[in-house]
Image 1 (cartoon, rainbow over the protein chains, first blue to last red):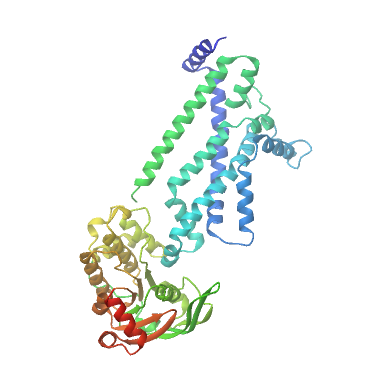
Image 2 (image 1 turned 90 degrees about the vertical axis):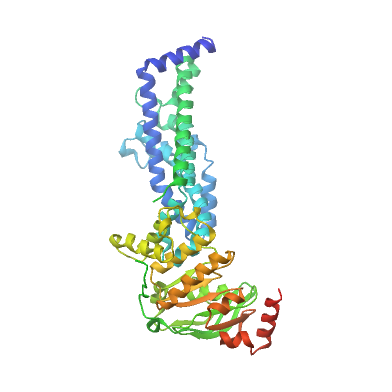
Length: 233
Length: 247
């Protein structure tokens, strides 16, 4: 199949709402969305606290988290695989080769990004706002949500970086999900598989959807950033 | 409501504030050394001195933002109470990225003011500073003078017993400065003890009842304002006035 013909078939699959294609897209969004929400719930407060509090060894912890941002997805996948496998400590949960295992892997992958970038953002904001907030009577703990709200435009960017990383990765979800058709097959693992098989239509169709999603999500985030800058409470 | 709104605690219940041999070192640098004085309720106190004399540092110590490395700072009403009943207006106040009214309401929330009365108290504080028309405007879009008055409104809404102001009129045009000074004097009339730093001798003359002169981290003179400006008692005081008047 030529590239042009592949594109035509891919557009046909999208236009017809191909069940397999939609199922793969839906699973990808569910896995990545859950990982992003989980990372945000843990990573935003944790990163904000690391930006505001001073404690022995803080520099070391920050350096470590920064280093974890560059973790190769296959390494994360392997680590989660070992934890969830029959020999691992969490074998009884029976999560291996399920979407939940993929959510765990993606959360582990993007949590350091959310924590590290939030730490940097909030540390800068604390430098600007710290004395004023303390002067008004805010404790450091009370200042955390204030600083996250003040830095909401930057927080959107942080979450976008995490989302991009999760949406684009292949290795981790392939290892812990097993790329099982109809169960754990995501957009990226399907693209990798179908390309290796020579079925370019589905691969290109999913590639187009993936790029479309990236544009829509980034556009939405840009709108959010604009609204965040204008918000009047 | 823009009429007098008394301080939440009478000044003489919280004051005097005593600095007893207060020193502050940062690394090898001595920022303040052996500072001893007391501030009583009532008169407006101006802290004067050349750049680097330690004026802002004194305010930050008094307000509890930093701790001295030697000596003691004591409030009659206790440090914890003083922390809640004093306010500090920074030279460049930081306003939150929200409306003018929300900035005031935020401060009220931090002080445990019930949500049901925050809007009313915020509106009253804004009205007292002539900012009622700007209540819904994003705070950071206001002019420099309006931002200073908003910061003062935010401080005022907390009904402080003591108000510290760090160069409150720096970088303001004459009209904005006059408005700010009027607002500060009104606070004094409502029973708030006002302590401010300034480089502007005319402003000190207009507003202060007493003067503390700092020089390189030491208190070198304390006088009634009129006496200081008609003839300082110390060489440092005379030199400071000469240099400042001719600069």
